[in-house]
Length: 417
Image (tube, rainbow, N blue to C red):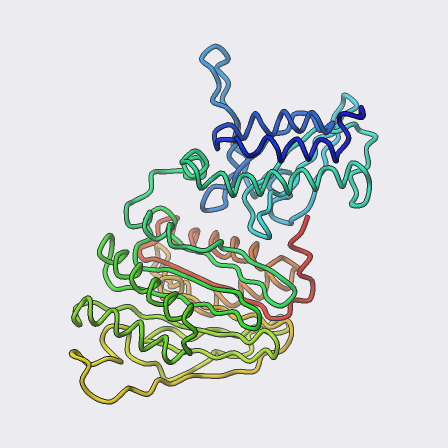
C-alpha cells in the first residue's frame, strides 16, 4: 500500500467525498474507496425487509453487458452466515485471493453485508492491519447507507421484494430501527406481513435510566387501520416525550383516540417501561395479550395483569365527564439476562393449512431454543418470523408484531462483527 493509500488518508478521503454523494452513487463510491484501501471488488448486498435475501446494490447493468446480479440467500450462503452471526466469514479462492464477507451494521441494526477480496496471506482477525481496515471500512459504509437512504428511494426500493401497500407504507414510515443494543438493554422487533401490514405497530425509546417500549394492534384493516395506529403512535410518543408516567400515557392515548374517532374505533396496546439501572419493569395493558418472561433458557411466567379496555373505548368518557380513571400498572423485578417478549394476537393466532394455531407455547419454545443456542436477539427474532411465515404458508391472515427486550445482556458485543 502506497503512502497515499494509508488507511488514515483513505478514510479521510472517504469522509470528504461522502458529503457530495447521492444514494444511487454508493456502489461506485464503495468500490472506488475499497480499492484505495487495498480491498478489491468491494460490493454491498442489502437485506430485504423480511431478511430472507441479500440483494446486490450496484449500478444498473448496461444493455451491452446483459449482467444480472445474483441474489444471495440469508440461510444458504456464506454471506448469509456473516449476516446471521454478526461475524466476518472468509472463503479461500484458487487464485491467491480470498473473498471476505462482513455484516453492514448501523449500530447493531443489520442492513446487509459487504463483500471484498483480499490477498490469501492477509490475516483478517480483529487487531490485525487488514482486519481493522475491513471493519472500519464496513462501519463507514453502513453509516453511509443508513444516512443516504433518507435522501432518495434507491435503497428503499432495493430492499423491497414486492410492491408495498399504502397502509404498510404508512406503518414502515413510523418505525424506529428494529434493533438496538448497549450494555444495559437489547431491543429487537419484527413486523409482518412486511408489505401489507396495516393495524400493528411497535415503538421504543432508550434513555439514560429507562427504556420504554410498546406494541399496538388497531382494529380493522388496510388504510383506516393504518391511520388509527399512526395516530396512536404519535400520541404515545407525545406523552412519552413530555415526561408522562405510564398511567398518564395510557390516558393520553385513550383521550386522543376517543376525541378523533368518537368511540367508533379502538386499538389494543401494551405499554412497558424498564428501569435499566434497577431492572424494575412496569407495564399497562389496554386489552392486550400479556408479555412473556424468559429466564435461563426457559419460560418463567406470563406477566398477567387485569387489562384496561382498549384505547378509544375505556379510559376517557365522551365529553370528558367524570373523574379521572385509575389505570392499573403491573410491576416485575427482572434479573440480569432476562428477556421480555411482547407480541400481538396475529402471532399466536396464525393458523396452518390444517387450522392449527401457532400458539404462545410454540412461540416461547422457539425463542428459548434459539437463545439457548447462542443466537442473538435480532437473529432469534428473524428466525421466529421465518417459522411463523412457514407455519401459515407464507401468507399471514392478520398482522403479527413482536418485540424482544433483554435487560443487562451477558454478551452485548456478540452484536458486533
